[in-house]
Figure 1 (cartoon, one colour):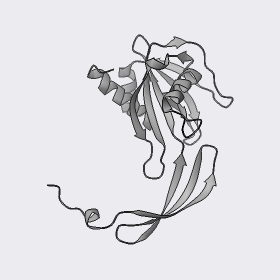
Figure 2 (cartoon, rainbow, N blue to C red):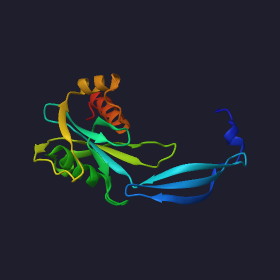
Figure 3 (spheres, rainbow, N blue to C red):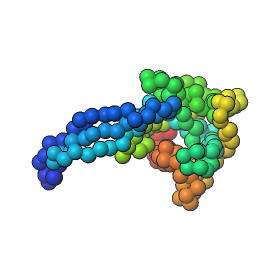
Figure 4 (cartoon, helix red, strand yellow):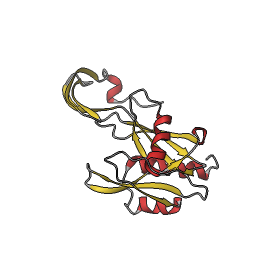
Length: 192
């Protein structure tokens, strides 16, 4: 039997108010007023995101395509799996992953060759961004279709090389680490 915790004895958190502080092109920022289980009142920042998709492009030889791009939030270039935001809040993430694969890497896969791997929330403390991660196989080179503000280089690495880059701190993006490690685990079980 699970021991009773402090939060089991009290009421639950209750959002009393949510105020829009900034409407942006990618996210909206809110200030939330929350009633705590003990009756106290706290204010929390909340960032609303329409969601995103990412894809692990696996070449026929098993190497994985990665994209290198500048990220303003951390003021550095990062090595990541291809990803992008949904065009609308109700765009299927499969369609988003399929689109981002070709746009960012210049490789195409048939829709049936882009399969779901996992879902993750990027930063649960203050943001609702949810990313569905897919695996794409049977790739055909077509050429990148980058947005005007995108400057992306594409590289191919083995899973062992990518794992070592994660261990060495050379890959620091959360969705990339989660996606690659999940793909590695699933592949090792023979389920990929």
